Image 1 (cartoon, rainbow, N blue to C red):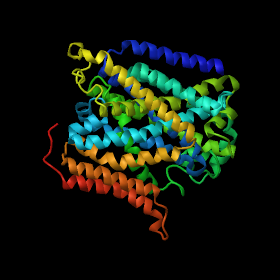
Image 2 (tube, one colour):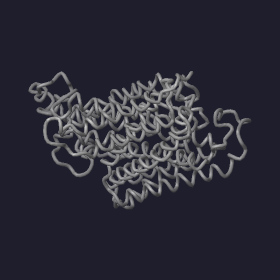
Image 3 (tube, helix red, strand yellow):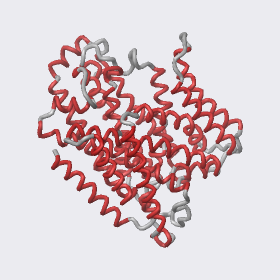
Image 4 (tube, rainbow, N blue to C red):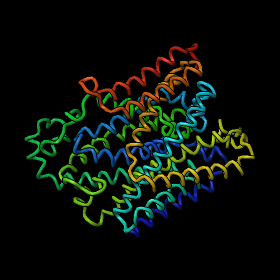
Amino acid sequence: MNIVLGIYLVVLVAIAIRSARKVKDVPDFFVARKGASARMVAGSLVATILGGSAVIGAIDSGAKLGGAASWFMLVGALGLLALIPFAARAYKHGKYALPDMVENLYGKGPRLVATIVIPIAWTGIVAAQIIAAAKLLMTFTPMEYTTAAVVAAAVFTGYTLAGGQLSILRTDFLQACLIIAGLLLIAGFALFNGAGDVASATSNATNSAAGIAGILQGAPAFPFNANFTPLDLFLLILTYGTTYTAGPDIFSRVFCAKDTATAKKGIAMAAATLIPVAFIIGFLAVFGTSLGEVQGARITSIAGSVLPAPLIPLVALALLSVVLSSADTTLLSSSVILCGLLRIGADSKGARDPQNATARDPQNNGRPLLKARIVILINGIVALLLALVFTDIIGTLLLALAVYAGAFTVPILWGLAGLRSRPASVAAGIILGGALALAGKLCPPLPGAIGSHTGDVLTIAAFIVNGICLAAGRLGRKSA
């Protein structure tokens, strides 16, 4: 296992070194020269979306959600498809990161809010990925938690600061392939090994047409069950699916595409890939319940119980890729936004046309790149320190996503639809929407039938109030 892991890390380092040699200025580093193909955009989107919370968390939820665990990725695919009509405007108004687009749509005030809020939340998400990577390394190697966390953080921070987006786009495609291959292997062997249970369970399952739910008798069904209702799906779309339509990591992939047609094609390819992967995850979530109580991530227990020993290292790399592929993108997205706050690369004349070498500012060849790499290094260290202090922050991760969705989804889609509002109204919508979403996550259930849904009501109200603020300050429609 250690040999295979060593080879994997060497490959990542080689990609980083090769990419670093091609980085000439800030546009190269932040948006890969805006030259990414549809295949690279799709691969990076898939690798980023299939992060630790998506794969590991969804499979761990099998005992409660059963086949409905498939909705995590199905909602992600739905969010990507919803982005396609807005992709052209996003590509036009975006520069390096989401706050650039917010400024072009609404002005500097809303941009400042986005620049402050997003890096704070996203650094916590990077820390969560370090925690997940460390626990995976502990499962497959003799490393202790501290050592594993340092190794994981050093790897993805190193290749991110070396080659920026060029490194990430190349490593993400490799990692996406590894992730899907690993999931297919585990699911294939699980289905084969559990074939004897499938026939008896399917005949007794109350919803055998759901497919996945019939694998184990009594498993919660797809698409809905007592633990996952249509209301839960609606809330999942609001707080989770919308982050795939208006999230900073998603837009960072769009900004790398060579043109709008390429961006749309890449988004569509990623969505099409996520749909079958969603049902594989749902199947594994159901199958994993047959193992009873397990230590660590349930997917590692499934792999250990069904796979022959020679395939374990490949699956270990696939699971490690699950985490690293989200961590690098999240780290760079957060760092690019911080660079914007510090005005690093802000004067890059070639930012709108990064492929035009004659348009580039010579000053981008030196200090701005060094400063950007220092920001990434510091950001990675802060995330590592968080991961060493807090060893379970998945709840904080989901909280951050919900608050982000309540604060930014409506203003971003409003602006990309060509609607305009006064900056003060936009800022009010962001603040009130984020505050209500936070209250919805933190508010305990109150007595009574309605009181038990207080958190849900506050979450929905976040989007409604946000929209009311934008409508109250609406200006004339902006041309495309």
